Length: 230
Figure 1 (cartoon, one colour):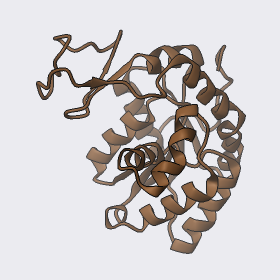
Figure 2 (cartoon, rainbow, N blue to C red):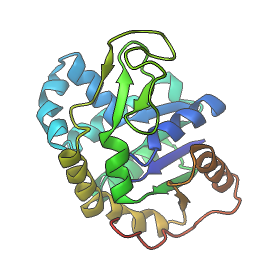
Figure 3 (cartoon, rainbow, N blue to C red):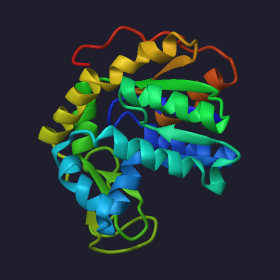
Figure 4 (cartoon, rainbow, N blue to C red):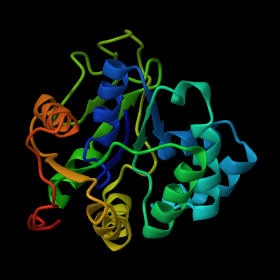
C-alpha cells in the first residue's frame, strides 16, 4: 500500500496514518515530524526550518523534496508507505510524481480528509502531549484522568504544547492550506486517484471510510463543497 493523506492541519492525518501503519505494517512519513525531529536535534536542517515552522509557513520545496526522496529509499518503505501531508502544493506534487516514476513506485490512492476550519482551530489549539511517551491529550476533548500525570506512562509534570499550536498560527496554517495545498486536489482528481472522506466523523468511522475507499468501496471520488469557514 502506497498512499498520500491530504487535508488541513488538525484533520487527523497523523492519527489515521498511525492506525494504517500498525494495521498494514508500512512506513508513516510525516514531513512535520521529520522537521520537528531535526529542530529538536539542532541539525543544520533544523536550524533552517525552525523559524519557518513557528510562523506556520511552508518549508521551501527543494528542502522538503530532497528529504522525502531520501526517506523513501529507507528499508521500511519497501513494503509500502503513507505520505502524511505531502505534497503540499502543485510543484511538490509534480516533483513527487517524477521522483516516484524514477524509483519505479506507483501510488495506490490519494485520500483527502475533509474538515471544518473553525472546529479545527478549537481542536488544534487545545492539544497537549506527554513528553514522556508521546500520548496525546486535549484541554477539552481528552483530558488526562489526573491533571499532572499521563494516563499511559504515569509521567508527572511533563505535558507540553507545540509552539505552533495556538489560534493565530493555526489560522495562518489553514490559510496556507487553502491557498496552496488545496489547489493540488484537481491534480490528483484528474489522474483518477483522489478519494474524499469526512474528517469530522468519529475517529473509528474515519478509519472505516479510508479502508473502504482503499478497498474500492464507497467513498467520494470528488472533493465535496467546502463547509462554512473551510
